[in-house]
Image (cartoon, rainbow, N blue to C red; front, side, top):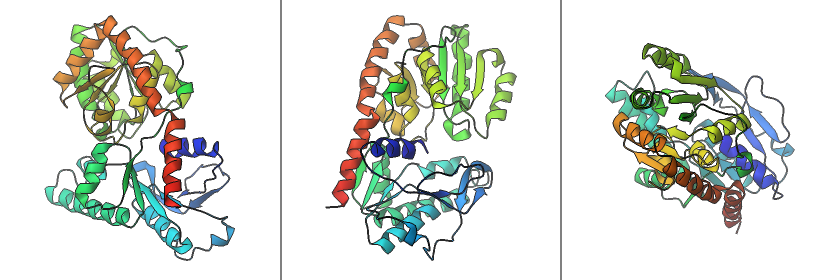
Length: 357
């Protein structure tokens, strides 16, 4: 996970050591201070693994050096394991709540069309979130809407807002060239990212701006379906799917674009939005959850309603106004400095120390 990797690498430069417990994964290379827990692939989700319940004996404890804090990143098996380990070692446990899990019930095929099943699963997720969070000494969330959501679940534990930072050094003037009036989306190609709304909006955009081009950077379970949809909609020549790219190549696309578009309504932060800002690219986002909190409307981008018409209007406004885009470009880069990974890591370090007092 990007968030874990970013904080880990930045805090290691400040002298800290991390020991990672993660589900086993085929092809994963051996890493120093990483323990792999037996796991199985989650049905229908090849990118996710389900850890197996084999943690009761803690027979690896003699191999561990002194640990000060257990930082949980998951509310399911790995979260329960971390909490048990913290109690075994008699040290504080904290949780980062990364994902609005209840929103994903709208996108799981076997339950999304059943009101009863959806209600059942939502109730379970809320209870599970509340129980684990309230057994920790502290919870971190990436944005205010997530804090409010957890409070509505009945979470009483101390909560701190701490977004994941970005590596500003990666975002330099682009070496690559994209066609004029290019839009870029970066992220997973899956239903919860609301990409059908983006395609609908873009179909209207090219009626007004025939030369516009949309690049989708990333991969996911619905890529093939989206490629077929784009072809059937007659957008094939003006929509490109790049597939998965490494972080440096992704940064090139973000910097070379005229506009970054992000229609997701489920992202708790929207790290790629901040990265686009760091690249000096104005953004258009649906004004919900993390992206809705990050973007200052009219300053370095636009927040829209979750409908194609509003999204289309803001895209066209920016693509047809060079002066406004240039103004927003400078404002975006300035705002992104507030999310520098060094600043965010220093804040997390203070949180860690507060638990050790």
